[in-house]
Amino acid sequence: MLQQINIQFIDKIKKPIEGNRILNGIMNVLVIILFPVILIVGIIIMVFVGIFAFFQRLFSKPETELELETLSPDIERWNILTNFSGINIYQKYVSEIRFGPAYLNLKSEPKIKFLENKLFGDWFFTYSNGILLQQWNSTEKPNTNLIFIGIDNREVQVLEKNIPSVNWKIVETKDKTLELNCDTGKEVLTYKIEIKNVG
Image (tube, rainbow, N blue to C red; front, top):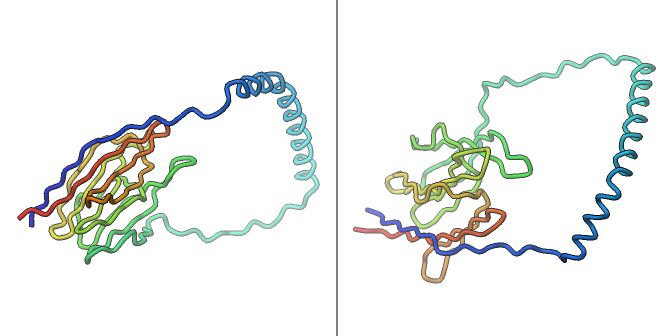
């Protein structure tokens, strides 16, 4: 069964700048005035903590060191991300962006070669006869691809490239299409996704 997938960019909404201009101005002046006082108090506290730590280390008894049993780094820890129509997709944690989402390695059973040696976000969406995934192009800045894996033939399609966001939400509309909302921090990008069976 062939599938016809259409995707188009349909909307871009700028986020409003929040706050009162007068109140923000007053807060900026207070921060400039109070910054040296806060800095001096912080330095004094750090000196006292340093002196206390020095004397504590000097007068404390050395404890016997415990040998911790470490696990071999060669052991791979794969957990199931999703199971959909006989395809198991497994995830292995790689790392995470500071104060942001984690990125993962994926593999599947039965094997889908496209998933190997690539980074993915922990976002996925199962829909009718396939799975939508978030492939990461970079860990330095938000740059992702929208991937569709067909369940019937395990065929992989890149639906949209270089989306400048890792914060995605997807909504099914009344007319049986999907809307992907991507929050960049400054604006919300909206993509319309149509997945049709042909043949």
